[in-house]
Image 1: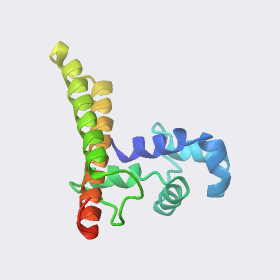
Image 2: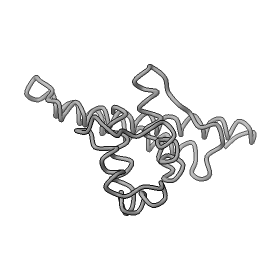
Image 3: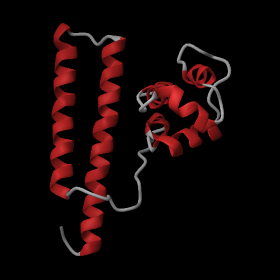
Length: 147
């Protein structure tokens, strides 16, 4: 997923969308929608606004998209609040299976369309996030002396 799509999804998939987020960002909903519109090349989301957006929503896909575009993976450093190592591993495995199925379906016609590539990119981001949770649970379990 690229940064532009990540910003768009962060706003539009948040409960209440731009109408709910814009006042918390200090702007109108029309302005916020315009800033995250992938077809807009003016009045874009600033770094400070992206930071505020992530803080207000708790959705860090913009950060993960930036990292992925530059060959990095971001990992939260605090211990996970709930769940288990095995649960997070199973969630990651299910996501990996879903990604494999998505790629298999996309390759059925021996080509990948731009929409299919976008869907694969989004699924990869979800699998990466799930794998980070596995790592977090393992680190947390090690700090506690086991799971």
